[in-house]
Amino acid sequence: MAMRNSSLLSLRFIRPLIIGKQCVRCFHKHAATPSVPSPTPFVPDVPTFLTLIGRGMSKHASKLPSWEKLFTLSSTELRDLGIEPPRQRRYLLRKREKFRNGDFGPGGDLEHVVDGTAQLRVVEVPLVPKDSRKGVQASDSSKSSATLSPGMRKVIVNLPPDAPEYTHDPSKPLKKFAHMKIHRGSMLRGPFLQPIKGTDNCAALIKVQEGMWEDKLGHKVDGGERRRAEVRAKKRSEERRKGTA
Image (cartoon, rainbow, N blue to C red):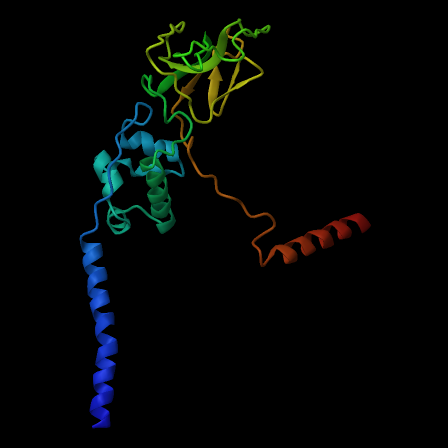
């Protein structure tokens, strides 16, 4: 009788665990498929994306036939396609998740791009009133300097690569571009910019390049963590030997 009671108690404890596993399996089975982000003007296709993230991933472009496949294939499916070693797959999964979340590298948020090239330019635009209903102008609207006209402010705009100048349209909101900033009042500064001659660094081109968005790997100095002391001791010994010779 005691044995029967103990077996009943054990079944009572085991049953919730079994049900829990079934629930977890069902949950994963019916989990929503990750969304596929839209391509951007700077990143219109798979080869461009793989080129930007670097680490030689562009050699796998032929294995990913479509934009949708790039963002929906699992690690196992990527392995079956021949994307090796595993760290390359993990890197691809991490970079595509950042892109899905809108975390772009330099140039990823540009709108006017032609054949992988875009222009950025520092221009003057009128100051926007703080409160148009009360007619209150911005506090620094009357300020001016050697590089700034009164009632104006400097902003960075994106233009097609061959555009000679910018025409301001008040109806279109101005956009801030990640990784780009204005330096010393009028100079354009940011990664991978190629200044346009004759613009005093107020305008530059940015082009798609291999590894622009790459997460750089570190490198071992004097061996790994375990061998570092041994390697450095040998170097010091060699230097002493050369010094006494």
